[in-house]
Image: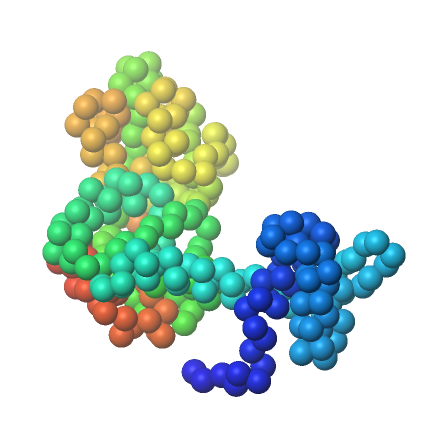
Length: 297
């Protein structure tokens, strides 16, 4: 996409404005940029002349952004951040490029991270930058090349590769299993249940799948799998967890499956990427590698 240099102010004007907007002070901006207060004032005035509108309300010894100035400051700040990040990425890897990947916390630490050395060895010219987030990623705002997505096969403005399905199982500590008779699905109605914020109806789906009627389900609410598994290990209740994410705990005996009642999740794991990045070589290399190591079932 081309742009007109006529509408592109100089970097010095934009940096001065961004600092003054952030501090709401020409003096503080001058101290940050190692300039004089009058220099900041002149640069802001020059930018206002360039855009044809006031960006600050000047009141005696104070300044404050106009409403239009606030909106412009946010867009300028985002643009400067993107330029800074692009420069940092290029300096870190001028030859092969950098892939910015958004990951889910537990999936990233338990499944993806242990395998990434294979990709790095096969593609030494590509630098991977990982960003962990619980909330859904916004490609336009987060400037990501791709992200791991758990859910339905849909992401607005994106393409997806199926990575794997998921089986969840009730898991608890051996001590809790000894204390209660958990040999039947209905028996879990009598023990504390651990719920995940990202899957608030998971236990309801599990009980329905096992033909168990339930009036209401209460229990501890936790925002991450890692914390939920630790709560289960500590005997605080029974958690419904993806089996492939707790293989280590099951092998050590820290967690057990008190009954044989797995359930396949309706959602799947996907690699998602914005359509505009589909031809990006580091992304193409990562997609090919990920397909080779993911079950895609």
